[in-house]
Length: 228
Image (tube, rainbow, N blue to C red; front, side):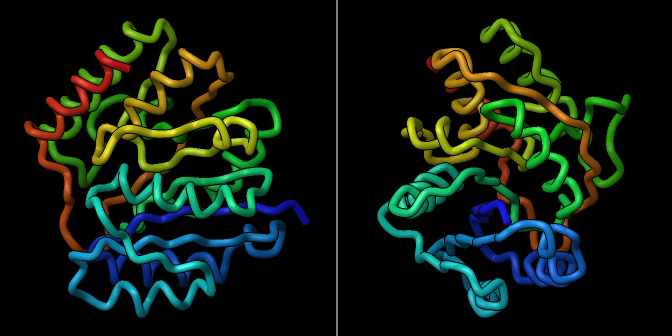
């Protein structure tokens, strides 16, 4: 079976992880791919996320030195690079994306270097469970990033990305927080990677609270779009 690594950054997401674990155990993904999980746990986590994470029988890493989503992903990628495999998925831990969507992204990676899941590609209007501010902010940032990089993206702030081995091996992210996705998309332009979006279903997070600070993180993301 084809080898796949799924990287999940975690901070206080025991409910979301429980949902993901139950869904994974019922998914076709488990039957069709040789899946390895790398879960990286933020040092500030104070719920039972780490205990739930052990149910994935994957590699569990304590996040050190720097906090934030981008820093967590980069630490996990460094671990993956010691024993790389063909395809890698970045997945949010809150249960808002399903493993069925991951299967679709893995299939698309047969033809593209990087694939992202878009919540808006086949939809108009705001998604149920998404705040108006997050919706409008993502639309604006996606539009600016599309202009900056001279290629279309409809969902810059998606929490679901897929990479072929050759692309991820070359990447060294600078982003520490939620500007990671903006850096990924800018890197696609600079390195001339092929990229595709596919439409994905999204549901409101399962428990916990969003770590995204709408205005402050939005400005950080905007800066990353400009400088990448």
